[in-house]
Picture 1 (cartoon, helix red, strand yellow):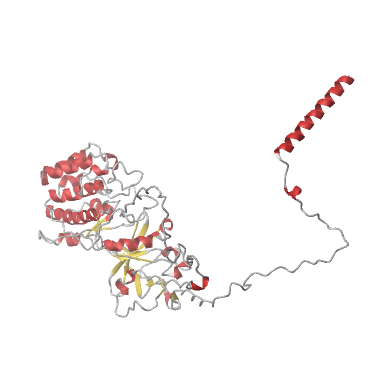
Picture 2 (spheres, rainbow, N blue to C red):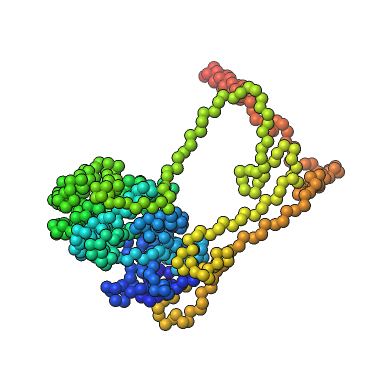
Length: 493
């Protein structure tokens, strides 16, 4: 069943019932936006709070989404990274998805980030003043410097993936309050402990470095695209920048790394509005041959005299180092005393035997304790006074259209999680002298039979083949016979 919601359709997930909202600019249409990987819909809760439902295309519905969501959650505390907080509708926790609403398998529920994308802001040529541009650049650098310090990267920085709340930005009115934009589309985030995507991101048109055509997934993947995006933000108050914008982004994709009118205009705007330090950072990134030649985001913050608020609660991701074993010393001729081996083996359910140890002394294997559920349930609707983490959980999804058939539908049945069968109790030890499982064949009849055997017994000669010497002698004999026959025939003629 394809997920094609209508306005006011109901979607019951766990204890919460969500409602598909209406697009504010298109009456009768659901509030959603389609992308390359998924379509995002706006949901409304029973408490009139908004959530985002991200429904992936079929090729991206894999269990990697669930695994990645658990790892992403630790970065939700970074500024501008609230979209890392999410719930994944995996078939493991929502088994009714296997038969109903398969298109919602591995869909993601996350916070709804209010605002418009930077791409839409460019296309509509929204006017910002210099203070608003500086406030937006400050918030953007708060995110990027912290991500850089933690060893992670977005890998697809671009206008469509930066959300700006224009109402909140314009309400600053020159105050020194901090404004924070948000990043979205975090499924391809780089971190050393993340699994590399099967299809690497190759950047977006007008933002991608020339070296990322075949894909990029490294810690410095954001440096060039971030330099373009940040320079665009800083100079958007400059009127010629609005007039020369290419379309969905400021630069024509064919102009990247080339000397062109727009590049000269942006370089001039940075120098005239902010000084030569910003101009040099932009030129350094524009003329770079590799991503690591681009200046880090901390250099941009230093040139703009921006104080970065460090988030210490988020751990820094480190690369996993491979330990190289030491070269073993040459073996000694002195006999070493035997080392007692501990009980236990490399395979679950098996136990190693020590010398002179009987089977009766081996303890029966114990059933493995079930692993606790991920703590992503303690989130929004699950964080209620009625929620008992020790109580067995059962989830269900009920998709009810907004038509008159809602009342005719029966209540959704909660499918409990299956419990593993109990491990059988250990059996009492048996005497190894008893015939436990092997039965001897019946005795052979020793009476003589008058009938001849149908098949002779196999002898040692039948089992063995000819030796090499026997084969050579046979060949030599055949050759001699052929020579004699040839001589006799020749004499007769």
